Length: 467
Ligand code: HEM
Image (cartoon, rainbow, N blue to C red; front, side, top):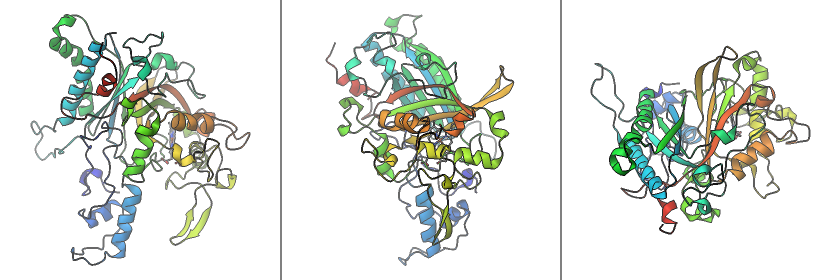
């Protein structure tokens, strides 16, 4: 596999200026392969021999090129091209005044726009060192349930009636670590920063955490010299490997939503017909779970047992199902939802997406419950209690309904011991104690900016009578 830095297929940039916030379904690989890409280099990238040096003379493309285009369509087209670094900042607003909250959101938007527009600096670069044209910075702002009604039932800002339908404090799930208290983990705001360089993430994060209150006081002298408007609660970090493998050494990202822009958007963004408050249109729910991976428990398992836990072959990523004869030889089929000849029913992928052919009791097909996953491995150093390293996955997912998507998947399938058949057991990764969830929260990302000077969440306040 080629190094992504030398790829001729340029990594897609974030798509600024859409009705949606950045960092949710973008950067996005173009849905249509535009034909301008260098076919030889794509062939190298995909590990195939390039044979087409055809001039654009209108003749039909040779079969090799057709094949490459098909492979591009299956592996890249319409998929989010996650940046390599993630930072999640949780914060509470230290005010119960709506005008102050609006001023905070305006300034957070200014910060976000400023950071997303920064170009990589050409100064102080070592000789012969290449500076990328973009670090692909995205900043995504999300609202927690406590902004609408806090833990004491207080509606600080008069927003109760406009709370997005599925936004609530994250409940506990089986497999949560005993000391994980979702009630203590929620926050008013979550800021997700992504870029392709760790320094860029650090600089952007420091910009928010260390300079926000200072800049706010300067712009709004009436708040006084000592008062902070934001309390920053926590900073979480994650990184991505180019090959998408995470600590369990499996490729995480094979079956993400990817069938083209329309489908990506169908699963993710709230539409007018979704029975949400009007201001939520073009917004998206964000589910965050910090999942610890207990490596000593995983690493004693042999490869076959690890594959049985995931439901895929470790090297190829193919499902553990029976193979059928096809045009290209024998290929694995997707597992029959309740047939153990296609691998254990407790395997992770089978518990989280059974792919049954019939609609369920709610009239939904299993594939309609998919969502966009943007997970990032994390490494938190040493766990002093056990003397082992503390690492795992920052599971971040975006969707249009927490109830019909994430919660249905987690409660009705993954952690339901009687799914797909009575007595099956819960997801093997949790049953064996390899995974435990240690942190998390539910959030709602409002729509993107409509014009210059707009701010995140503006439509929420436009829906309210003036105070
Ligand atoms: C540390 C935690 C986790 C690890 C290591 C992990 C790993 C994986 C791997 C290796 C795959 C197969 C490759 C792929 O299709 O992308 C996968 C698929 C998937 N995972 Fe996870 N996962 C984790 C947590 C979760 C959670 C919490 C959920 C949701 C409740 C989830 C939902 C999914 C879904 C929906 C798929 C695609 C299944 C399909 O369409 O066949 N994962 N995961």
